[in-house]
Every structure is written in C-alpha cells, then in structure tokens.
Image 1: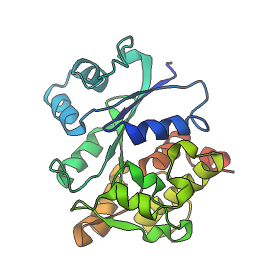
Image 2: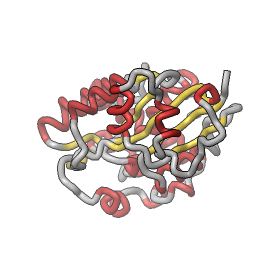
Image 3: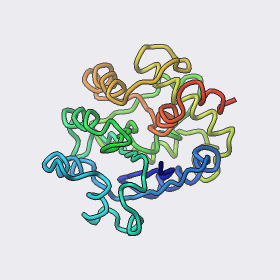
Image 4: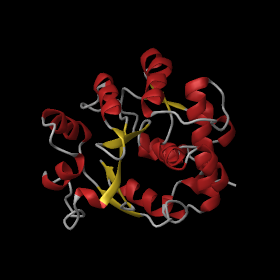
Length: 241
C-alpha cells in the first residue's frame, strides 16, 4: 500500500505554509505528502460528474491544474489518499450552498475521488483566534466581502499570525480549540468531541444555524478537523497531550 498522500488546494501561499508547519509535528510516520495548488473545486466536480471514467488524480494532472508539474512522475496508484481543502468563501461569484452540499456528498472518500474539507470562511480561519475560551462565539459575515485576511491580521492573537512560527504547543492548542468549536457548531457543547463528524454534518449545521438565519459562518478551520478524521478521536487525544 502506498504511503503517499495528495493534498489539493485552491490557493498556495497560506496553504503551503500550513502544510509545511503541520508536517513538522504530524503526519510524519512514513508518509509523503504532495501538494497541488490552483485547482478549481467546482470545475473538477463538473468534469468528473460528466465522465464517470475520470478520476480526480488524472484530471488534476492532465488538465493543467498541476501547474508546477508536481505529479509529472506519478500515477494514481502512487497515492493511497487524496484530500482536498477549499474555502467556504460565501461572497464569491462561484459560491452556491446547494452545490456545496453536492460536492461534500460526492467527495467523501479519500481512497476514491478524494475527501473534501471546507474552512469557514477561508484558510486563514486557522489563526483567527482572539481568545481560546470564547472562540465558540466567533462568527463572521459570509455573504459580503469583509476583507477577511485583514480582519484576521488585526484581531488574531499575535503569536498565531505567522504560520511558519508555529511550534507543537501552538498546534496542540489550535487543534483542540477548533475541534471544540466543531462540536459546538453541531451539538452546542464547547468541549473536545467524543466522535467523528462528517463534513456534510458540519456544513448542514453551519447552514441551518448560521448561514441561512444570519448570513454568517462560525469560524472553523479544516485542518484540525482533517487531523481528527485522519488519526481518530483516541489517537489524536494522545498526540495532543
């Protein structure tokens, strides 16, 4: 079985820094991660859905999504799992809550088409923590352009601003805080989860509790949620202590 993982991103700058930092402390066990940037999740979905013989890996490799030719020497069997990380970004002209539900249902298996993870509202949500104790109340407008990156730079705890400066302690605290927030979004309890939750369930609760009634999202990063799924609840708890 291959020990390689493919990460697929829309953006590059923040995502590359996060993955580089994350790999110092997690996903080190005989695992090689390759990252492809610049992919368009709605277009990938459209093309694969239209042609049942297409798979995510070959589509990305052959359709010039892999602009740096990261995958040039690889084939699909070289990768055991594919994970896709994208922003909710509700003010974008491409945004469509109905289509996002379809995407999460479609890209729900990392060993097949790939597993999709969503950050609310954007990748910078990882560091958008002003206070770990009150993070459960952190929401932002999601249907208008609030210049989110600037907001994060102004409001976040200063030691969280630079992804490259994260040490194990920062990662442990951020992972714990975001996973407590995930549970709060779903069941209303701000404590570490006792089970895994699908991305569809997270989105369904964002939609019913925040997006539809108030045009906001509860700030939540996809990366801690991915780690929770990847390791499982008990194993991740061990790694956080």
